[in-house]
Each structure stands twice: as C-alpha cells, then as structure tokens.
Amino acid sequence: MIGVDITDLSRVKDDEAFIRRVLTPEEQAELADRKTSSRRIEYIGGRFAAKEALFKATGWKDCLSSSVLNDGYGKPYIKDHPELSVSISHDGGMAIAVVQAP
Image (cartoon, rainbow, N blue to C red):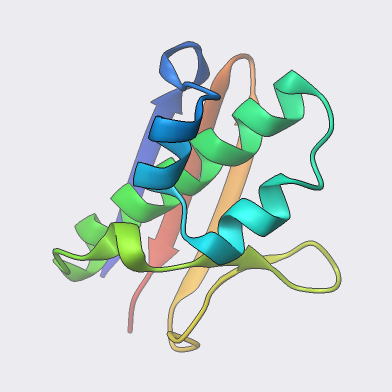
C-alpha cells in the first residue's frame, strides 16, 4: 500500500506547542540541528506529511508517535518499522511525503 501527503509549509508553526504535538522527542533533537527558520519549517512540515502518509499507507491511528528520522546519509526512515519505505521532499513552500508499506 502507498500513502502520499502534501503539506503547505505556510500553515506549519515553529512554536513549542505545535512541535510537541507533532514531533517525537527524537525528532525534536534532530530539529535542534536546523538553525534557520526555513529549515526548521521544512523539517516540521516534512515530518507531518510523512506521518499523514504513514497513516494513509497503514491505517495506524498512532502515527504521530512514530519517529521519522534521518540516517547518516540524510535518508529518512521510520524508526521501529524497517519494512516501510519513506521519501520526503520540499519545494515551493510545500512538503510532500510518500510511504510504501509491503
């Protein structure tokens, strides 16, 4: 099954309440490495899109509790679910994510 989501980055908030609601503690640690506002917004929006795509691909209700992290090469992966593939891209004020489940 494949799930796809696109997020308008102008609707993403870089504030603590939104970040705590959308990102896991591990994702919040990765977010801290993003120093500019635009990079932070891209990261938050990309993770939100990935979690929405994860829900669409799997139907799991607790997708916000799943960590979408980057490996040493910068490639995103869904922690604790190596059977799933995820891709995230940002351009033109939008973030898109695709998740493929077996």
